[in-house]
Length: 149
Length: 149
DNA sequence: AATTAACTATTCGATATCGAACTATTATTT
DNA sequence: AAATAATAGTTCGATATCGAATAGTTAATT
Image (cartoon, rainbow over all chains, first blue to last red; front, side):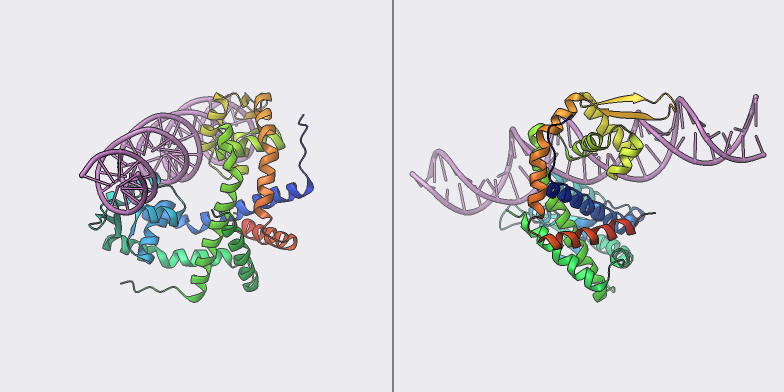
C-alpha cells in the first residue's frame, strides 16, 4: 500500500477539479451536440466561429484563441478548407503569415446553426440563478487568468 | 451579412461558456504539466488514477467515470497495458466483462507523481478564497448534474 | 428450447492533438 | 553584407477521440 496520504486541503482541491471538469464536459457536450448535423467537429466549429466573429486571422492567432497548437491548426484548417468553408491567403507584407478567411459558404453554415447553438448554451446555464451566473463567471475568470504565463 | 442577432441573455451565456472552458483548460493543463516526466498522457493518468483509488473496474465503468467512449477505452487501456501499468482479466462469472487491474508498477508510478500533482491542483485553486472554493464547487456540481440523461 | 434483446468490448475510418524537427521568411546583430 | 535569432507554418509519429459496425456473452421473451 502507498505510504503517501493526501491532506484534507488536497482532497478538497481534487474533488473540486473533478467537479470543474465534469461541468465543463457536460456543458460543452450539450452545447455542441448539434454540430453533427452539419458535420462539424467541435474544433472546426471553434475556428469557424472565431473567424465569423473576429474576422480574418493568421493561424498562430487562431491557435492562441482556441488554446491549441499550431500543428493542430494546420490540420483543422486543412479540413475546413477541403469543404470550402475557409480560404487561406498568404500575406503580401510578411510572407510568413497566412491569413485565414471565412467564405460565404462557411458564413452560411454558422448562420444555420448559431441560433440553436445559442439557445442550447443559454439552456445549459439556466440551472443557475442570474446572480449565480454572474458569480460563476467571476470565479471562472479568476481561475482562467491565474495560470497565464 | 447575417440576419441573426443574439439576444443579451444569449451573449451573456456565450461569454460564460468561454470563461468556463478557459478555466477548465487552464486548471487541467497546469495540473497535468508534470505527466510528461513519466510519459503519461492525461487520459492514461485519469484511468490509472481511477484504478488506483477505486480499485479494479470493467472498461465500461472506466469509460463512464472518465466521460469517454468504450472504443476510446480500448485504446487507452491497450497503451497502459503495453507498459505493464495495468492488467486485463476476463471475468469468470460474466464473460462479457474484462476487469482492469492496476499493477504494482502502475501503483508505483502514481505514487511517484501524486504528491506533486496534488500540490499543483491545490495551488491552482489557491487563487480562490476558501468560501469561494466552496461556492465554485457547488455551482460546478449544479452544472455537471443538470445535463445528465 | 429458440428467438430476441441487451450489454461488453473490439475494430475501423476519420479527425484531433501534442511536441519536436524542419522549411521559409523576416528581424537583429555583429 | 553575412551570420544569427526569431517567427509562421508544415510535417511526422504517437496517442486520443468519436460514432458506427461487429462479435461474443448473457438475459428476457415467446
